[in-house]
Structures are given as C-alpha cells and as structure tokens.
Image (cartoon, rainbow, N blue to C red):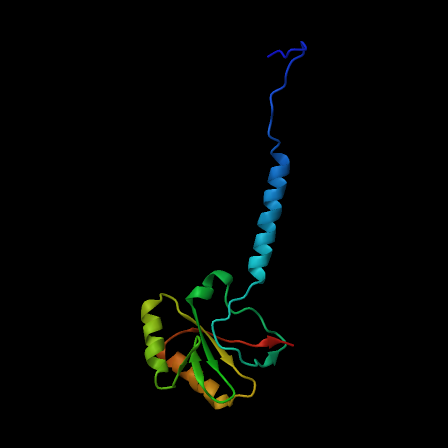
Length: 139
C-alpha cells in the first residue's frame, strides 16, 4: 500500500499488552474485594472473643450454610427468622434432607446463657449434622 507521498502506509494495530495489564489489574482488584466481603446470614450478636478465631466456612459454601443465633435474652434465630427450641429439630431435619452436606454455624452472644447455646448445639448433633462451628471474634 502506497500513500500519496510515496511512502509505505502502515496498518493500524491494536496494542493488546496494555489491555491485558488493565484486565489483570481489574481481575485482581475484584478478587481482593470479593474475598474481603463476608455474608452474615444471622442476626447481629456480640460474639465472644477467642485467640484462635478463624473463618469457619469457605466463601463458596456460604450459601449452603445455616446460621443459628442465640441472643442475650435466649431467643433462637434460624438465619434471621426467630424460632423456638421446639421448632429447631424440624428446621434442621428439613436442612439435612435438602442439602447433601449441611453446615451449621452457631452465633452465641457473649452474654447469653451457656445452657441455651448448648441446647442448640445438642439439637444439631441429635439430627446428625456433623459440620458445626461456633463463631467467635478475634481478640
């Protein structure tokens, strides 16, 4: 291809290297932001602190996890729905039959009676759910 001036005209090219750099930067930013987001399915309670607090459930398993919360008054919540201790076995049985490998996280308020938290844990174990964790805050 010759231009009017007699020189050879170069074809226009899209430089892809800077585009790849931008895409990788956006991907890394998205991954870091999504990992820092936590989904709390239960009600807000003042969790007790522990020195070895760790994440109980991987990010991809959070949708399959049920949160049982016990507040300082002894009320029990299945995710954010208030239930009684008598309703808990029916809810857990439905969870076990509907989910292949159910996971339960227990949020017990630091000021809650320990007997209420143990009663919830006992009901979960009676149903046969093996993957149970107690949520705490890090010291």
